[in-house]
Image 1: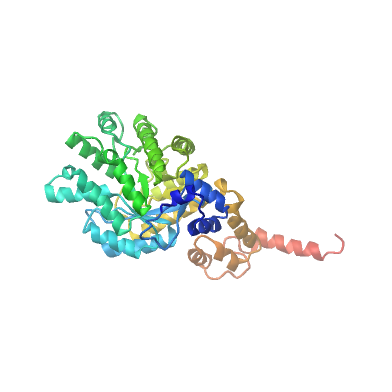
Image 2: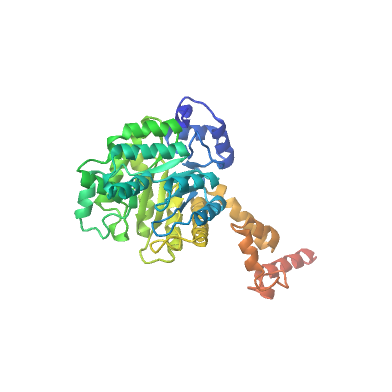
Length: 433
């Protein structure tokens, strides 16, 4: 039975108890929010992943890691090394492969991953149509639906489904004076199919059947943002908002059928618009989980978009975003290496926690308080062990050799914390004070 149906019947399942224990909130809150679609469990019920990943209202912000081959670079071993990085730093993983044997690559990634794996099924059907029929937009509606089903049978836990974009919105966006008409790869594929076939979005035409398939596996529909802004100058224009309104209607119909659903967004967004973007999405969709891509507050950051976007990600997390889709230093420039995947993942791990300190308050900040306590005591072993990356932290701490004083090599003998501790001891031992 789907977890939403169990929650609506008043059942407390083992998964709900585990979420309650993991997050430190009451199991009744977990059950109620699952029943409303405000908390979801990212999973394929027939092929559960090793890691339990709940996302939603009142829960810790999670991080998604994108990996996958391209048409230019097909190296499965490298992608599997990226999976290992994702297992260490991430909560969910998306296989965005577009080169090589897509079925074999996806199955190997799922086998290697400890995390729930997501995909974008239109990639595969478009690419295979291009190879077999000399045109990506020549795929049939049945071929698209069969590909979705194949991914579910392989154990995919969530899929980006670009059902919010309509044929009218696509045509208007392409004719508009947008800086970048369509930046979404999957969204562009769906738009191209609609225009070539003079037909409405196949996901929308077969929406009820899609809901039946996802409910059978209790997997998650991630409603893709085909018209998200690819430039800050396009943020929150009529096309992004028009698609969001369509998406909000699809969210409501999915929840009515007991299907887990989240919404993707928002791409490139100026800093001052990020918080209200989250609040707008939550308001329109009734508070379902928000899966944010970035957001990137500037367009000039490459090859440091993992830093630029982590700023936007922290703000979106603080405002209520639930799942952060990381960016790497290679974003907008090329396929990332294993090292660049890790750099992006760490940046987003930091961004998620920075947001949680605001969103969850003391529940999240107790980690920071503990580290600060040990730092104030110059208890290096305990402090370093509690940091986000203890191994790297210790390497930095000893990069000029083990410090000869209790302090680090930055302040050395002039460390204010070392002096303060000495003064406290003097005050404590002085009988005149």
